[in-house]
Length: 272
Image 1 (tube, rainbow, N blue to C red):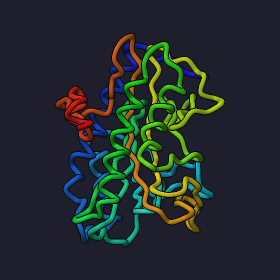
Image 2 (image 1 turned 180 degrees about the horizontal axis):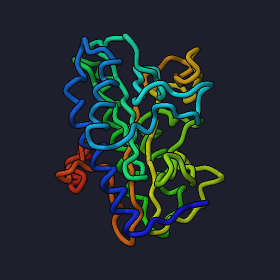
Image 3 (image 1 turned 90 degrees about the vertical axis):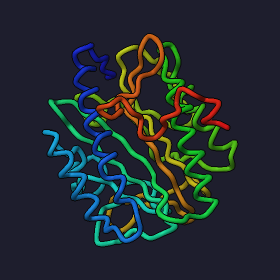
Image 4 (image 1 turned 45 degrees about the vertical axis):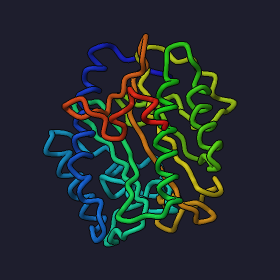
């Protein structure tokens, strides 16, 4: 069942989204060579709890063979999503995905971004740019009257146009009073993509992209998803509200700033 949120519900989701975006701003300076991934996770959890919220991922049982042990998914290079923080240190040249969510006042927000650590290859820089662009192309289609396939189709077209692959076994999702709600939000055109979008629907739109083959495997920890061919990957995500007009990104900072695309309203500059 797809839940349509009231104006009161949406206000609460805005509050949750702002809290999470502020957390990402706070931990961004840690994305440098030498940072231990477990320390990133600890700071994310502390920043979430400081805002009176609860980490949504810690203890989550909807995916792997056991409860997810951390507040943050930290996935490096060929790891697509669900990487478990550990004693690993970030290294120059890596493409690192950070994905986290929180619950505040009974409402959830979900957000992800990939970071280029130190000097990286031209290949990874291009993958990062194209994936980030795909996020906003998908968001632009999250309009009342459109179908989910128009969101996924916009993402798929942009990614494949640039020679990359959309991960097929992992998709975005509805979000609200639960972390994962209906509908599933594929990043590609699918047989199930005929759901018509309506005002009050809230979606986690999250392109997950591989430089090579789209097929994935689950690592021995039971959670981490990685590309089968070990090609680099990239991941961005926003929580988005469908309105009567322009889609609204709910994961903005408390100052109304979009961490991933400050020039969203200037498409010419963005796509130059």
